[in-house]
Amino acid sequence: MAADSDVRIVSNNADAVIQRVIARVAKARDAELDAIYDDIYPVVPVDEGDLRAGLHKEIHGALAGEVATSPETPYAVNVHDGTSRQRAQPFTDQARENARRRFPKRLADALKGK
Image 1 (cartoon, rainbow, N blue to C red):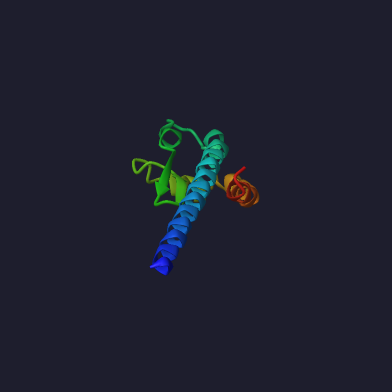
Image 2 (tube, rainbow, N blue to C red):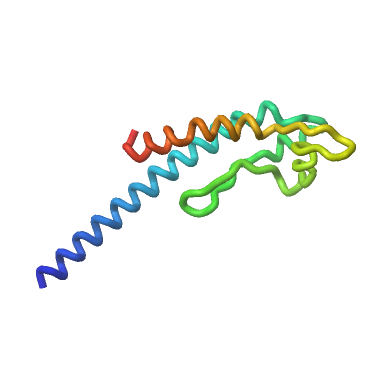
């Protein structure tokens, strides 16, 4: 009997630890998505403003997310990458580089409870 209760205690503690880790990673993810949004927003090319207005954050499951453009702006990839008739205006590149530098520390700090 004692062994069963010991297993339950360990299991409950493990579940609590996992939930704390997930919450801390989600907090780091949310902060990074905010930072990425803040990096992208001012450099999104503006013609009529729809592309910038459609910029938003999406959460995918417990740990993933992205800053995306609205489905009403399917031309975003053409603006970013260019076409044979339009020069590229890569408005996410600097944000991506910033996130690559920033996120590992942000995640480490979150996991430490900072």
